Image (tube, rainbow, N blue to C red; front, side, top):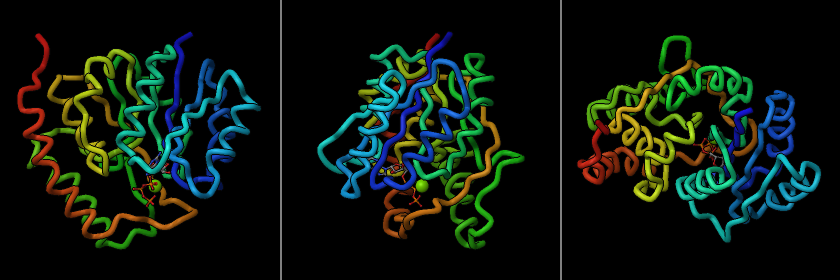
Length: 244
Ligand SMILES: Nc1nc2c(ncn2[C@@H]2O[C@H](COP(=O)(O)OP(=O)(O)OP(=O)(O)O)[C@@H](O)[C@H]2O)c(=O)[nH]1
Ligand SMILES: [Mg+2]
């Protein structure tokens, strides 16, 4: 049986963590384990994760980091841990139910025929929260379907997607030490390297729901910074090439 490790970074997800854990274990996927990467969340998410680890000692693990270190490094640390602990497949997802655990079965059904499966909002059948204003929808569509595609020439329709399943081999070939982005563009950087390396990438449509608890932090300065950082990514990986 291949081993699947679901890596979930958390910062102040005390209310979501127990629920997402139940939802994941209820999938009854054999050999599925969860790794939480918590950054000493002020709301006590780390202690809740420790309780869950005590309840499921073989299948639930926690990495405690000292303070808010950002989503990108949380994923890199989590991926490294997953590889070191024998994962064949690594799923990345948020704790806030924007990424419905229901899709994981579909992801695993397509792996390992693909190197990475992406839960995509912008392929036919994909959608975003009905509560999004047209302006928010337009900005997100423009960022993904126009800006990133033009700036980086990526073909992936949802280059900022954060819900993915990687094979072990794909993460090893990426070489996690070369991934440097830590904010919202972390997902774009991973996508760009995957395309440069010629990975077989499959986008599966998902419905993306907004977090139910808590407020979004994606304000305009953060968006502009992310938009400009794609050039940094292009420069950094200019020599990365598909292996023969
Ligand atoms: N460990 C860690 N986790 C983080 C950090 N920042 C965000 N996260 C987690 O990463 C996932 C995605 O972050 P979100 O805050 O949901 O980002 P978002 O979906 O763009 O924004 P929202 O609209 O607030 O949902 C969630 O599970 C967060 O708890 C961080 O600095 N460290
Ligand atoms: Mg979110």
